[in-house]
Length: 129
Image 1 (tube, rainbow, N blue to C red):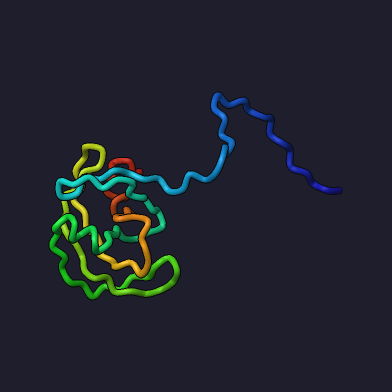
Image 2: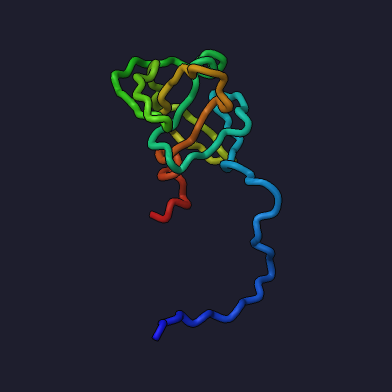
């Protein structure tokens, strides 16, 4: 005798949750860093660090400190960042966050100037803590 799980009854939802169109990609936010607006900053729940690319630190006139930390990128490559930014006041949606960023020099054209990872997610009031 074959055991079959009972099918749950269908539930009518007021909103259509089907995926319509293409994948919208990662969520992104607008940041105010050092008095300058940085648009479309992606939020990456898989990143264990906040990242800023070196050209953005120069545009924002931020002081980069040296670091010997080694990080592993999504493609598996291990790199030593160009430096680190610490205690940077960053405004998101009118809320100030004091953040640290690792400074990377991309090997090819970057699709973002800043990437927010777990350190930012854990500092938000909606992190479930």
